[in-house]
Length: 191
Image (tube, rainbow, N blue to C red):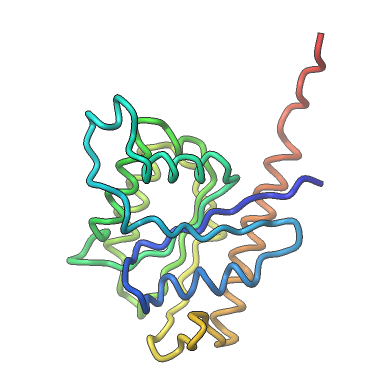
């Protein structure tokens, strides 16, 4: 069976981000057959401009697109700023629209905010993912609060409830991708 590739994207540029910590933790919990890559170029993306998108995208945007093209699915984890997505993540999403990088791509998200928080960011993320016709894996969209003091020195979370929720999300993604792969029509034989 072919290995699947999951791209993890944190919407935070904060060094001690609980969102990034959750994704780092998820990377350690990936099921067999799933390669996981944590995207680390969010702070390097220049502001989106349609002119740059129409010609040749800047290197940071081209690198993002290459990682998205190589991924079978994307898992987001983002904080909420002023009731919405952080500008840096919205900028990343803007870079994906023109080239269709997320069109039809399976995607999910994790909310690590305290109960009742982060909902504005997730609503906005869902709007953008619907707009670009990403295939949202609802079973993999989980809310699992992560307190700042739960992040260990290595940048991961050791709390068993958090780890269990992340494992469930990853399994849901793996199952979705397997079902999708198994239901795809066979490739045509060369003539």
